[in-house]
Length: 268
Image (cartoon, rainbow, N blue to C red; front, side):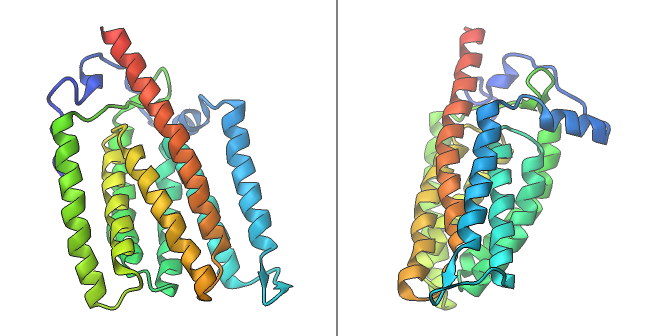
């Protein structure tokens, strides 16, 4: 997706110069990843992981608690790596793409089990390669002062273009998934397109990526609740992961927006 970044209101970091950090070693990487964390952010991450772990382990099957099963472990690891990736994305840290890649592999496997083929395609064909590409893009745009990626915002023209593209792609993919026999094809298509567009905006460091993630998270919670009352399985960890994503997306949207507004004030 091509985005115009030449205009000042689209790429604000081009108006005010930043000191970009050069990550030349693993020590530099660790410094970047561990700098700028507040106590509430650490507690939010640890609390989310702990809650998901406990509720997943205690999940019962046919009235009995099954302490271990390959499916339960896979779902739990996918949820934990997803939560870590979500927090690191909000913190604008490079590790988001590492944990995001691991989460994509596991989530694709779980989605295939539930016949959510759109989710599988987006993880395998789009998320895995884009996580690698995204890390290389963010490496070039790390602010040496904040030790976070430099953020920017879209103008109205690009917002309209992206909105129209999302609608057209969703309908087209929904028809395709319906043809190949996927479960809930249009819901699946919606989450697939939103996730792909959201990741592209994330890689390009646009604040508006969080708006798409918020919408996606609401729909995905509904998508993963369906197996419970239809008797198709109990993906507790995955459902809790999406609940965590939703809360995190709202918080991080406000955080990124505040950072760009602060930059606008400094510029003016």
